[in-house]
Image (cartoon, rainbow, N blue to C red; front, side, top):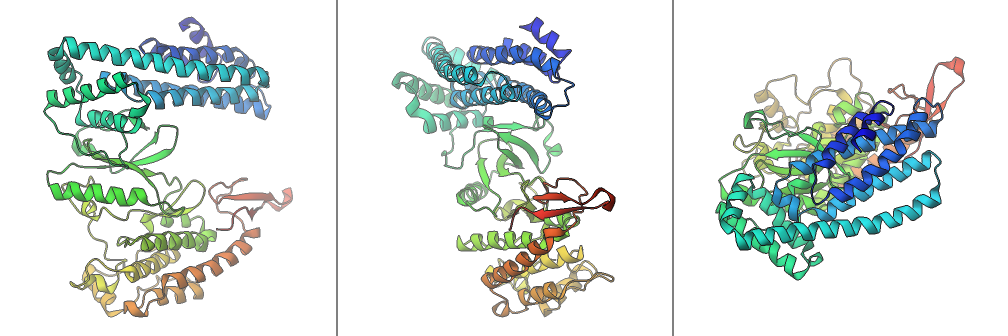
Length: 523
C-alpha cells in the first residue's frame, strides 16, 4: 500500500496526503481493518483521477477537488484519533468512528459517480461495505475491552500506573462516563460492566470525582480543531475563539473559559449551558454543547462564517432590513423563553454562511466580565445600554432594554459608528439617562424610516418604547420592500455568484459592464 500511495502522490492532488494517510493507518490497532478497507478504495480510484487531472469537464474537475478534500479530511481525522490516550481509543467513540468511516466511503462513492463509474456496482459494494464495517467495529471494540478487563483483573497496580503514564485527564474520564450513559445499551452486559470498572478504577487512580453528565455535555474527543493542538500553548496564549468541526461534520466555533475554584461560577456555567443548549430557533446561534470537565472549559457554538452585522453590512447594505428582521425574531424568541440579552450590539449579531442573521453572546455575562474566567475580559458596554441600566434598582434591564439596544444597533448599522462614540463616557451616560439620542456623524444620511424607528425604540421611558412585536411588523414591511428593490440590485461583492448575499446573479449584456441579481430568498 505504501508503494502505491507514493506513486499516487506524483499524479493526483492530495497524493501527498494519501501517503501520510497510509503511514497513519499503519500505526492503528483495533480500528486498522476499517481504515485499511477505505484506503484500498481510495488507492483504486487514484489512477483514474490521474488521467483527468487536467480535464476541463466540470464534473471531472469537481471529482478531483472532492477527492483531494476527502483525503485531507481523512488525514486530519486519523491524526486526531491517534492522539487520544489508550482509554479513549479502546472503549469510546467506536460508534462515531464507524459513522465517520462510512461517511468517507459515501463521499468516495460521490467522486466515483462524478467520474461516471458503474453506479450499480457501487451501490451493491456500498451495502456490503456497511455490513463489513459494522462487524469490524464490533470485533475491534470487543477485543480492546477484553484487553482492558484482563489488565484490571490481573494487574490493577499496572493499570493505575498506566492511567497516570498516559496522562488520562478528568475530561477523558468524563467522556468515558458520557459514553457509558449515552451508549451503554449498545454494549454486552459483560462489556458494560468492564467499562464501569475501568471508570471506577481510573477515578480511584487519579483520586477524582466526576461531575454529573448533563444533556448538553459534549465530549472533547468529538471536536476536531482547525488548529493542530490549540491548547498546547501556555494559558496566557489562549485565544478567545477557535474553529473546528464536531463529529459528522458540523462547523463550530469553540469558546474557551478558564476554570474557576468558585462553586457558584461552576453552578452558573452549568445552568447557562443548559439554558442555551435548550434553545432552538433559526435566528439564535446554537450551542451544540459544552464541556465542564476540560481545562479550559469549553462552549461549542455554531459558526457564523460571514461575520458580524457591522462588518457584513458595510458591503451588503442592501440587506440591512432583512437581517435586522432576523435579529428581532431571534430576540423575540429569547424573550419568549424568559431570557434578557443584556449585551446587544452589532458585534453580537452574526451572519451565517447562508446569509441568515442570528443573535449571539447572551448569557454567560459573569464569564465575559471576569478577569479570572474570561480569556478576553470585556468591560461593560455602555454605548448600547438603555437609561434604566444606570438605575441601581434595575441594573439587569428588562425586555424593553433589549428593544432600546436593538435600536442602537440600527443606529450603528446605518451610520457605521458606535453610539455616543463622539463624547467621553461620562457625557455619554449623562445623555443616555436624559433620553438624548446619539448624534449622526457629519455627512451620513440616515433614512427617515430608520430614524423614526430608532426614535420609537429608544424612548427614555421604557413604557413608551415600541413593543418588540410592533418592531417586527415594521421590519417585515421594510424587509419586503427591500427584497422587491433588490430584484435588480447590484451587489458590492462584484461576484458572478454571491453566496454571501444568498442571491443569484442575472448577467446583463456584455457591453453593459454590470451584473445584477435577483433574490432567491425572502427573509
